[in-house]
Amino acid sequence: MHGIYTGRFAPSPTGLLHAGSLVAALASWLDARAHSGQWLLRIEDVDTPRCVRGADVAITAQLAACGLLPDVPATWQSQRHALYAGALQQLVEQAWAYPCGCSRKHIESTQSVARHSAAVYPGTCRQGLNGKPARAWRLDVQAVQTALGLPALTPWTDRRLGPQQQNVSEEVGDFVLRRADGLWAYQLAVVVDDAAQGITHVVRGQDLADNTARQIVLQRALGLPTPQYLHTPLVRAANGEKLSKQNGALALDLQHPLQALNAAAQALGLPRQPEHTPIEQALKRWTKLHANTLGTAFAPKA
Image (cartoon, rainbow, N blue to C red; front, side):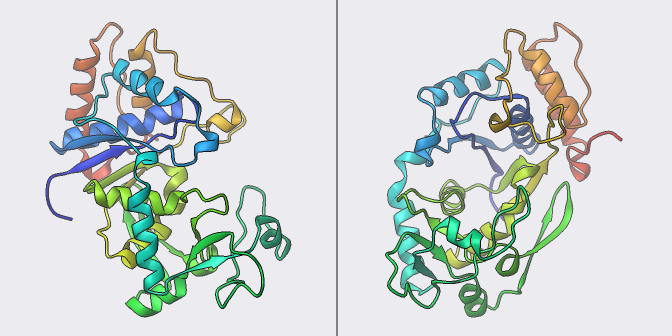
């Protein structure tokens, strides 16, 4: 991609930032600064039932306490419905999106699903609803790949993880663009927003790496550019699972922001800064270190 580096941090306001989310925020901010680029803040509040009232304001304050300030005012996905509707209409007109009448329970009943895994959609409604009422809209992955001459295996190179690939049709199936409850699916919203905001580099947690192939297929279908991707190391809870709001991760204690930033920096393979170091100076030091090692970006120490 060409033009000025533009990165973003895109938290969901389903609660306050925790140690894991600060790692992703710090990584994306440092990467933008190391490239002399822009850093944007996007509040991903498209899943309104899960959003916590006031969490967006609190997240912004948490970031500010850590010295992580966006270069332009933040945006909210909840204010961008027209963009998503236009993208879906474009896909419908190409015959690359179709209505689906299947419930999650029905899809899961047709196959064995491993714990923490999602069922692969078998394309039940691809040729029609067969009398079922329409619930969601899905992307016809095979139709897109055939029409555009895309390979079955979608490849990309992660700046930290190296070469990656996924067979979206076999490992995911035709994925949802608009949900049965009428809300926009994450995949469509993030692809449309990244393109609309000119995002050239995506730096986010490794738990989102599995979404990348779907997003690349959707970018191709919509004729949108593909950013460069870097997926940061995960912070894990005591039980070994990814630290998250769902498993009770505690909100950041920002009475001492440098302590929280030092923990995040160490997860990224960057050195702790001495106690009482001003936040601005600590960020400058980490930015310089990252700028000097972009080839091995955020490789944790062995």
